[in-house]
Image (cartoon, rainbow, N blue to C red):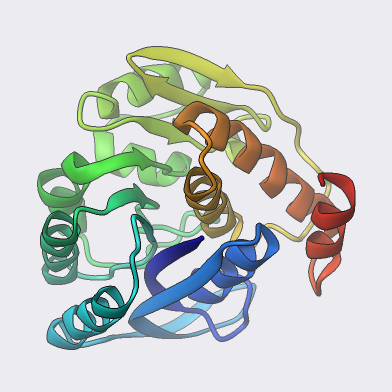
Amino acid sequence: MIALSVAGLDPSGGAGILADVKTFNALDVYPTAVVTALTAQNVQCVGRIKPVDPDFVAQQIDMILEAEKIHYAKTGMLHSPEIVKLVAEKVKEHDLKLVVDPVMVAGSGGNLSQEDLVDSFKKYLLPRAVLTTPNIYEAQQLSKMDINNEKDAYKVAKNLGKICPTVITGGHLKGRDIFYKDSLKIIEGEIFNSNNTHGSGCTYSAAVTAFMVKGNSLDESIRKASYFTKKAIEHGRYGTLNQFWRFNTH
């Protein structure tokens, strides 16, 4: 079982491709990865982002898929409209089932990429996705609607669900995930008093991808990923999650 992540590199190890790789590994899925951007950051803030040349992003994707039979992929930070469009073309070319984590703002609300990224996501990438997993801030940018409470989140999820199935992740919604695919579904959760939230969106979308690789339906993959991510937040860093997952779910 194998999956592909197309995302940025977070040298702190908490988010981006390194978080995706760790999540795939924890769920017994072999990771492959394409780097779209280099960052200078830590778990508190992003200092600088340096995008990878789009042609080199394309070559990375082609070289991996030339040698490996990969059916499922996920995206994280793509940084520019050019890379978004390129990835959408590669998804079509290689017939990939794609989970889109539309990384445009951090969990704190800070912008991570260019303003015109929203239109590119909606025009090129989301129509090719089996799921998108925005946090509350990204959902607001994609829908151009405010989210002040759960009712607002329902409306936004339904709005984005017209483009592709959407789950608004619950870190800012009392731990509840709002999922829309044909109809609205609520995935219950809880908020932990924890500082281990850096990269939780990456972990969530990577976990959904891994569970689908393992043959779970989209609905079941989302539920399992929600549980997995909450346990990641609860149990913290440095291998604790990996040990928890292996010893408590097999």
